[in-house]
Every structure is written in C-alpha cells, then in structure tokens.
Length: 522
Image (cartoon, rainbow, N blue to C red; front, top):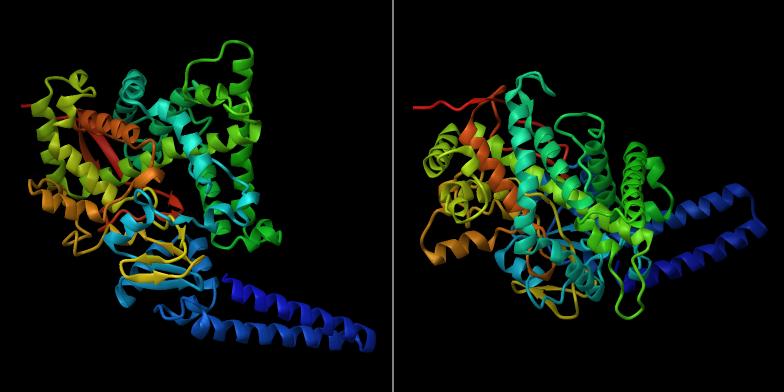
C-alpha cells in the first residue's frame, strides 16, 4: 500500500476514533454502530476511487474488481488456480496487467532480465516478509530479503552443490533409482498395476533428499510410514502463498479460522521438520554425525561473532532443503512422463536414443555420454517449460526509478512475472500448448536465445535455484534408466496439458497413471 494511501487511512482512523468516543459519551450503542458502519462505507468508497483514479498504478489495465481489492486475487490463490486465471487476463489485457491494487503482472522476456538478472535493483517483495523486513518470520536461503544474509547462506550451501559434491552423490541416486525401477515393474506395490506417477516420483526424490541431506532414508519407495509428508508439504506451501498474498490475515489472527485445515497441516509440517533437525543435531552432539548436506549448516560459525546457527535458523533452512530437493524435481518428472505418455512418438524417439547410446542399463551414469543425449535433454527442457515447479509469481518490489520494458513501476509497487503464462508465450514458442521437444534442437544461436528468453524454471541471477544442477542430475539419470528399461501405457485418456495447482510451488499433482512393462527387444 503506497505511503499516501496509508497516511489518509491513518487520518480517517484517528477521526473515526474521536467520533466513536464522542458517540459513546453522548449516545447509545446503536448510534455508535451506525457511525462505525457509515465510516466503513465511506472508507470503502474512498479507497475504490483512490485505487481506480489516483493510485500510482491506476493507468495500468486490469479487471475492475482486481484493481480495487485484493480479494479476487486472494480467492484464486486459495483455490490454487490463480495462474490459470492470470493467463486468461494476459490474453485479454496484454503483456502488462494490474492484478491487485499494488501488483502488476508483466509477461515479457526483458522483464526477466530486469527483475532477476545480475545487478537488478528489484528486491524481494512483502510476499516473502509478510510485514516489516526486520520482523520476517521465515528466513532461509529462498525467502530472505537481505542480500548479505542471502549471500552468506548461499556460500554455505554452495559447497554441497559443487561438481565434486554432485559426483559423490551419484551412487546414492543410482541406488534409489534402481529400487524405484524395480518397484514400478511390480504390480503389487503401492497403487497396483497402474502407478500414480506424481506420488511415485515424489517417493523417489524424497528418499534421495533424505539420504543426502539428513543421512536418513525414509524408505518411501518401500514403506508408507512417511507418505503423510507429501500433503503436508503441499499444505505448507499453500499456506505461505495465501499469507504472502495478504499478510493481514496472519496479523489479525484470522488464518486458523479462515483456513483451518491448511494452517493445521502447516503446523504439522513445521513440527515434522523440527523433529528431523532435532534428530540430526543429537547425532552431531553424540559424535556420530554423518557427512551430509546438513552438516555444513551444523558446522557453520559466523566469522565475526563466532556464533553457530540457532535452532530456528537451522529449521528454516531445513524447510527449503526438503521442499526444493524433493518436491520441485518430482514436479518436473511427473510433467515429463505425462507428456511422454500423451505423445508416444516422443517416447519412442527417447527410447531409441537411450538404447542406441548405452549397451546396458548399468552403463547409464553421469558424464559426457549422458549429456550428449540431445533428445532426452530437449524432452526435459520442454517439460520444465510446460510444467514449471513454480507456476505463479516470484514477486519483486520496485526501486526508485524502476522501469521494465519501458513501463514505469513506482517505488514500493509490487511486480511479478507469471511463469505459467510466459512459458506459453506464442512469440517464443509457436503452438505453446503442444509438447515439442524438437523446438529445443536447433543450431542457430539466435533461435536458442529466443527460446531461452522466456524460459526460467529455476529463476535466474544471484537468486536462481542453487540446486539446479542437482535437479538435472536426478532427472537425467531417472529418465534415461526408465527409457532404457520400460515401455509405458496410460490407464486413462490424457488431456492436453498436465495441470497443477499454484501453491507457490506446483501443488496437488495427480497422475499420470502409468503401467511399466519390460522393454521390447529386437
């Protein structure tokens, strides 16, 4: 909310308080209620007029109610379908749309460079802080708005994402992928003959994450003891996007009343994370702490103060490690296998490439040979385009003199790029709703740049996903081994697109339901 609007609101509140006090002294309760109701109506009318005609963003187009109130956007955030509605709004209003009183949605390639690229002056918005920056509740690598804090946290985790570290993770990944393939081929395992691949890919990525991060295998591929965590992760992310969209819900204590189940599951997820952190801390104190990613955080000491991370900071970092290392990779794999099942010609080409490149499934390991599988890489990039891990916004706050693609954004206004929509920009991707891996197999540098200009599934710049290479490593090894070993068959006719909910990260994933049978030879 702009300072001018805040100032006027404070003045009205002060005057209202004086009137109410005078009414209490001189009149009855009904009169007081009438005064309060009248003042509220006046405030609503004044607020609507201000936001439509005098607000710094008033010249941007958008639906009337969306420009007046946060409520339409908040409703679609709650349903999880905001990304689909925003896509329709851009088709109607163009590249720049005002989707909240203080939020502009921009869908241009240059916006990506300006907002997220090197040297950007656009800061993470109030969506992440949910109030004053100094009172930010969740402070981790993904959420912190402080550049110095972010740089410090990124330096710590970067050691776990080096080339040497990634090579050391491969045996763990391959062990889990072997078990994953074995379980898929067994019609008696979870789900029966046709597997719900959204769940199964989550089982795989979560087991990999648990072993590498906490040295604890959750055995999701063979046991259902930890399967409850998947809906909790989804609920946690959903709660964060709701509260980020309208922080007052939290400040007024309304969240548990308005979103009872979501907030209850949010609490359960944080308790689960705290238990994992406590277990890992106790291991370290006993002298039996394993060498895993979390050890980097446990051993960290601030160079200036000599202090270690406290429990809250460790728990906040564990949140992002659990979600980023498992949920988003699972989304990419689920989306990819939806499209491979829908477009069997694409799967046949993928099988042919993998089976002609490797003599046996055990030859499929990381390295140049795997990276030279161009069609496989094109399939993955096309799936990341069509099924991004974050389908909505990574919102930013405009600085003084902020301009994006010639559009002036006033200071403190929020701006976002809708990933779902820009990944379907027909100027960059003709027939954007069609899965076409071949579009990425071009030799022209100009064409490659055009394709990449609207593509940012891992964000970009200093705030880009630090686990990008680890995600690719997991995806390539999994996809190549599945293509080598299996034919796939869908249980159901598949729609045009693999739809997900926008719970900040992609939520409520379901399907495709696939049967895996041994590959035909000869």
